[in-house]
Amino acid sequence: MVNDSHCHFFSPAFFQALAQQRAPDLHVQDLYRELQWDDPGSPEALADRWVREMDANGVHRAALIASVPGDESSVGAAVARHPTRLVGFFMVNPAAGDAPQRTRLGLTALGLTGVCLFPAMHQVPLDDARTRRVVEEAAACPGAVVFVHCGLLSIGVRGRLGLPSAFDLALGDPLAVSRLARDFPETPFIVPHFGAGRFADLLAAIDASANVCLDTSSSNNWIRAVPGLELSDVFRKAISAGGASRLLFGTDSSFFPRGWQRGIYEQQTSTLQELDITPEEQSLILHGNFERLFPAPRSG
Ligand SMILES: [Zn+2]
Image (cartoon, rainbow, N blue to C red; front, side):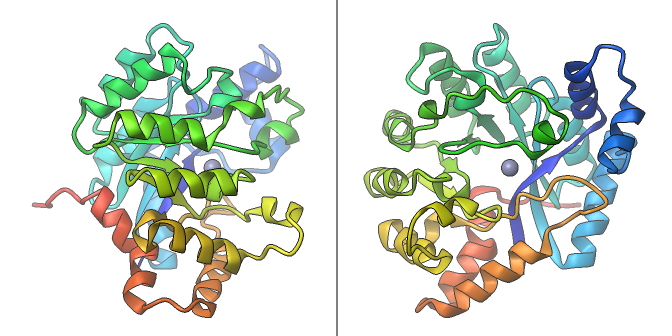
């Protein structure tokens, strides 16, 4: 069985925001044409497409990220439609005045589970009071998790559209995640892509804080910049730092028609075969940890 802890929900509102950033009069249909990506239709239609895609690939459950601030309601609609299959995460910009209120609303009324911080993108440090307000709201919601992007950040669609990506990469710091995790010990923190180049600091954070987890998502191209490092080493070191219960499998799938990135799954499952871990540890990474952090609502 497999659960995917990291997919993006590229909703109509997400593309509207990109079109707006590109040119105020750009029609979103022209954006789809330029990207050669499918029009997602409505949030409900996109949710149905995701579930069909998951069915076609044997994916039991997936976390979908609303990938532009203010888009909580799109992924909320998706989760409401498929509550046993989809878990909702949403991006919040702590610099926005209503970020704490949006966080609370997302994690309560809208039925979402994870609030996503991108400190490098939003240029708000993790130790800033504005970030802390968002994390406090999440910590007050039982079952909520805080996702924090650290390390290298490149957003493919922004690059393809020529949109500026003036990120402050120093702000995506796993050690600062560790400090938040220490202050909010009941709240799970998830750092994607094995820390995206900040691997040593993430290992230190995992070692220091029992509530810091990581996701394995994406092609993890950051590994190429480290001479001699292989994906199998990365898995091995992460498991030895905190145990298999801290790793969540993910792909970083996003747009259609590409859909679910089976290639990432195949690469990672074949890497897991190389490791000296038990079948139980392997199944924790592929689905068990997801079920523990995001228990499915009882249906019926
Ligand atoms: Zn992602």
